[in-house]
Image (tube, rainbow over all chains, first blue to last red; front, top):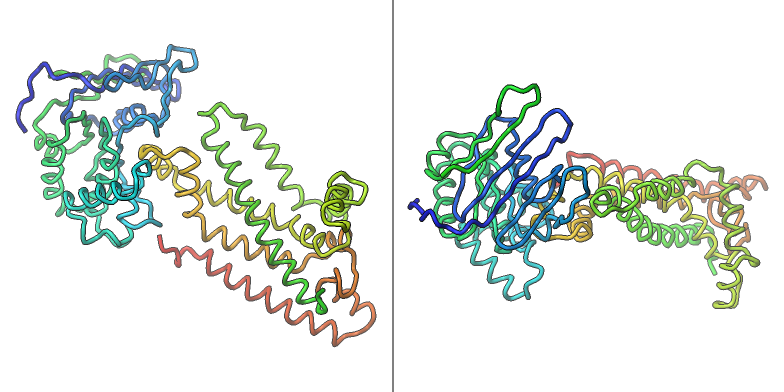
Length: 237
Length: 230
């Protein structure tokens, strides 16, 4: 990873507050330039919740999310959202802890799921391109049930990248992968994500992965000693 | 049209099952859509709950009561009945068509309920994955939810077929018991037993029981998670 200039255009910005059960409050305040940013924090600190908020699967109590010049969410406390772009229109790729490949579809169909807007030929070309980048070409006809953990996660990554998202969220993408395959997959991810010019938020609790990325790290940590647990994430570069 | 009550039953049950499959899967998908994505879209989930209760009514009401409702809805003096008669030149009630509708009364809600239950069992993370790939909620239901529910839907359709094959009460009320025209196997058994024609009755009872047993066997296999190719 090379150091990026500090004047990188900031692409994904979020300033959110959510209190799902009224006791626990999560505050997220981040500004992600293109490139990989690692998000770490103890389990239960709200890492996955942060990703769900960014992806649009959860609605915060208040806040603002912008991606490039698009406003994805705007909500004032106690009001219905003024802007709420649904997840399918956000153009944010999301690779979850479990790959969640569609089990009734082949690898090829999984990769092409997000490409329905393209004409057939362009779709096939994009799938072939991703398959060769991720070394999935011999597996295109298989079902997810016939793949190893590492292969599945590669398909999940390719599927998320296929529609050319404007940001990518990775939630512990190696957690469902055998230890023996992790290093190899991590290196493949490294070269693949380095080539992308979009903000990537990489959630992990592994020191090894954190060190591998050697990049800006956000940390979710308890703030203060108030009875309600407040978590703050802030980008410090 | 159909000399043999068994043949008539078969055709009636098949048509009723196919139509119920179409209607039941549509109703269940709509209901699931409102329940799962409704809050986000500001749709009224109460309405879906009411529709759900209405759809389940046929599973608890006596067949005679259902038959009465159907007669009121489809009879020669009802708007629907008159429209049908104007279009086809014959009344709707006391025809094989009415027998199909009668068999659908229990088949459709059964399929709708099973389909909805199956959709609710699908891991919601699949719907999230589909949404993050740009799929609208409807596309996610059609391309992910329903295919993942196909075994349960197939099992429900087979059970519905078996039930449609054996419908007695509603069929008697709206289609009558006209031998060679609307007399299905279940009705013919009743007639045969009443008239003491034991052999005739058994010639229907044995195949009806055999079909039911075969259906239950296949349904059991479909529902066995060990056979799930997921």
